Length: 96
Image (cartoon, rainbow, N blue to C red; front, top):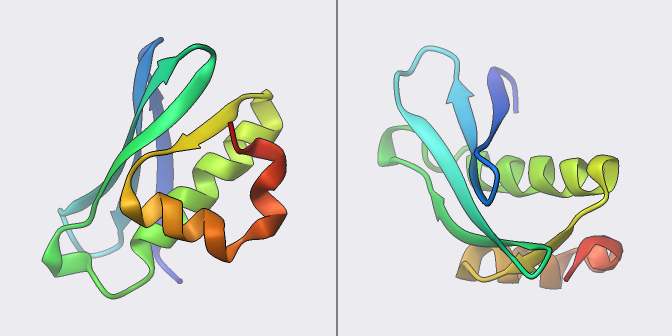
């Protein structure tokens, strides 16, 4: 998708990934909380005004890429993230 920028916001034991879509003030979010060394992806929130453009998928892809680069595991909790991991068996290396 063109015009989407993902930023990571790490506050230690909690954090978010934000999706900024060009031309919109709305922000998509994927929130996580770290427990037992695993970052549990708890909520994926995409406002309707930027929905239907693959924003949620891009948020999960960003978290997976970050997990590989920074050597952490992801615990899918949010139903969207659970389904994304089921559709992408190649992400098994980062599943906690």
